[in-house]
Image 1 (spheres, one colour):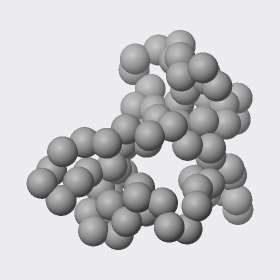
Image 2: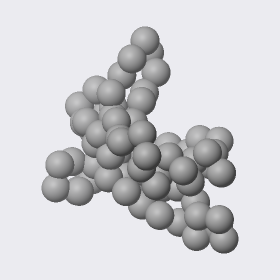
Image 3: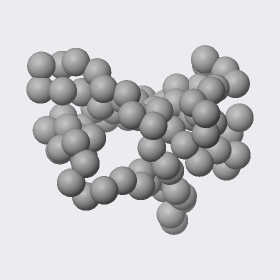
Image 4: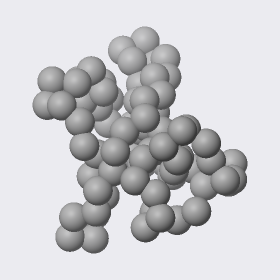
Length: 75
């Protein structure tokens, strides 16, 4: 599974107390960058504004993954 093959990511963001929230989101490639498609008032964006740490793993539409070794961490 590669980024070009999938359109969904299980995005992990962090709450104010450090807890993790995992949310499936659509992804799109724009000018060699990946973007997340979501509503501008989504809680995941509020969490990212407060704590930019996030992690993502490629998933299929039904939430499955082919491999557990494809996480991507960003700060």
